Image: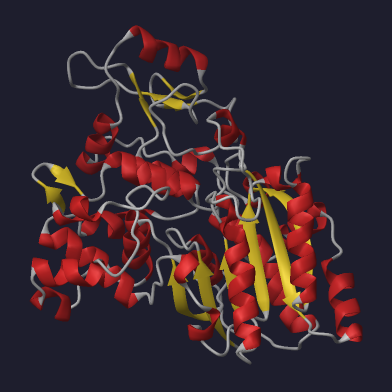
Length: 430
């Protein structure tokens, strides 16, 4: 069966990656992401790291004119000042432009109308911003949560409902499946009433929903990353169908995990599979050097106070079978962990952080995915590249564990087969 997919808050495309890993025959008909680094990486990973011939004909002024139509962001949090965009090189602007056009990226969800979406959508995914929900966000004073009308980034959740209602009002059939991903804090006392309201609104639109608190470590990725996922199945007002779907979705997290671990798609990884510590490869050595901090008292504390993942002599520390959550920064205390490394540069510490490549790998992406991202990495302006080390680590930290998504998409495959009698026959990608 062919699946049409729409990815809202698409990031670097963990959803796309997971669906392909399950061997599903998919076509992404639309995306929506305003973070320029995330959607350019999405394009490189899932479509092509190369530019289109037509884009090479456009001048810098023509590119700026096209990009002025969109609300873009440089950090995924606030809108980018157009005057900053004007300082970018034509090569960087070209990559942004191509990524928008090639992936049918609507960029700003608040400006996206359900009336313009494809008439047949099988799966719509939405991983709305979590900074106003997470403990880290609360620590920094982001306490607006998903309150309607609050103007918070996390309140963009309600735009998803608006879009689905606009589809219904325009006589466009709503997506057959919705998949939500966010942080477990949605179930906290502060946010639960809003979340329950969201589930009720979905029910009014004809969806049966069920959520599952899950952790990436249960799906074969050696990273502690608890998340909350919710499947919503469109049943309209068909009572018998609603009951069938409810019975299927009424599973414990342990049952979701067991289904995946019993499947042909479960291939658990160990940390040593993902560390890149063969420094005979010049590329790997350079990446390690770039993630080695200066030797200062504060940096020594980072080594002492965080997991020492790899010890002197390139010995993988067996104490850490699962690493801490990959966050948007590694040069910090606390971080995901550190690796012993003796830099060739004077004044550097004898350890390093996880490299951007390793952060990608611990999220379920591959070396090839990482190489595709950095293959076409133009200078924004002199000595400043579009995909800096810190930008790539931030993208990884903001993404969704691919294997976790495989586990939840497997449930959608099973619903489609067992309830709707739609069968997939493709073999999974290796």
